[in-house]
Amino acid sequence: MIRFNHFNFNVFDLEKSLQFYKDALNLVPVREKTAPDGSFRLVYLGDEAGSSFTLELTWLRDRDTLYNLGDLEYHLAFTVDNFDELHEKHQKMGVICFENPGMGIYFISDPDGYWIEIVPER
Picture (cartoon, rainbow, N blue to C red):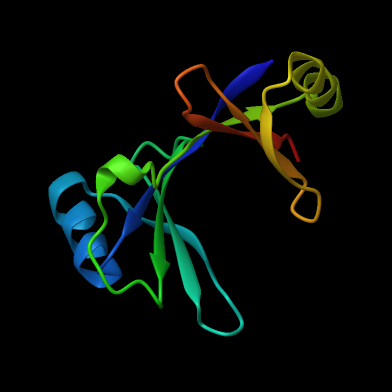
């Protein structure tokens, strides 16, 4: 089984973005992570329905210019219950473009170059 996990937007001004999503869509933080050195902050926003799909807002401390959305600073993610099987299949297909064994995830690239994150069901 494959199902959605989250979608990411990199944001330049996290507080302004959090306020916008609260005001415009009533999305609220459901969890967050801050790097020990303060270099990044991830805030996951959930909806009123309590669905498992979240919007991830990523703030990078050292970013000094607005994002050009043509830079593909986003990704789509899927949670899978057959992670090892899919990983093997994706290796055979030659579509894995990045792996992070420490986090236990990997990314595949579609024919257009869009990245899709594969997340094991935990």
